[in-house]
Length: 436
Image (tube, rainbow, N blue to C red; front, side, top):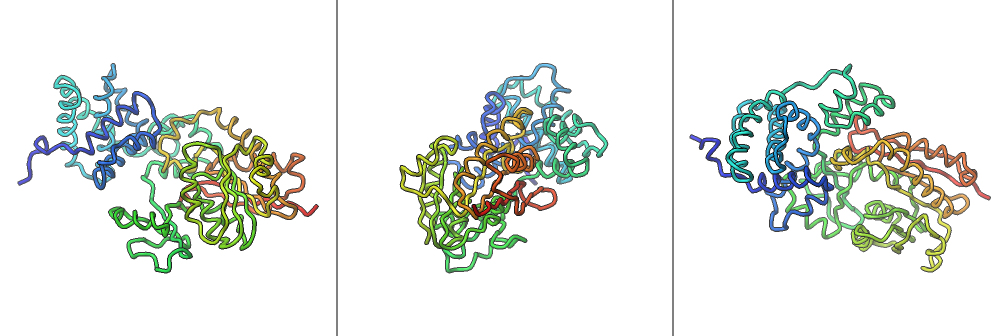
């Protein structure tokens, strides 16, 4: 006979997750920074479980918070709220798995955790609230004809963002997008066949995208040495679209603007096999990742330039004795990240409606700066990890209508909408400059 739920030894992962969620509720730290705060001594399954709970709570926090608001008139302190949020997420999981017998265990475990993290008095509150929370978390998904506020609450997205997507994509596609964003992200990796003489290991699951594999759970001990050896690179199919659209050729001189953390630089070099690659990005914490990825390049001369692409880029390139014109230029601009919300689960809570006016202005400026580096007859790819027209088609149209865009023509474009492509969202536009 198994031990009673109340006698089950609390998981360190659960306790760690509760502490991180309390911090997130209090300070609204970025999810990646929050998880980076975990001690390196927490590894393997405990680390994975902690991450699963933290990301799951943040992903569903809108729905959980709305339900708790109906049950509690005065929110308790953050440590107790964290317990309630994790219990809420676990109840959502139990419903998805049709595991009604798990509900009692979730209640007992939340009560036991509260006694340790808060107080016996708060444990009594948690006991009462989680029991009432269970049926609310078991509510079936809403129908298509609900309002943006109701859809936003159930799928934990800001109502203003849901309203924007309804206008762009219609109700069925918006519903599919909301459901997509609420599922944990699949981990994809690119096998660098030209670097490794051996075939991909069997635990890497082939996908519909050539050279890209799904990394299934439980194989991190085998994955880590492959990453360190440079044979494998974690990369979603969507992030490969811009480099593939640019299609750099052997021997070309290629410029990668906004290059950090360097995944696209690495793919460009792997595609070229020979030639020269110049990677540019702002000084900052992501430069170390860019340096590491550039160090893995084989057969291509790689140069790193730490500079602002909007501030005298030509002067900086000249100082580094690098070319001022390139046959192929990639500018992957900072954006809203609306195409990658599976991976960046807190983005939706940090976005503001005004960002869709601010971002396009910077994006257009970066596109103009990149265009100045393209040689006559050369190619320019503008890309984002956004699915919103304001940051994609509208920016490209504005560029082509400008004086700087006059020599260019749109050759082709690729737009990934996750609910149809089956991977992260984003867009890439191939612009060709005429021969002067």
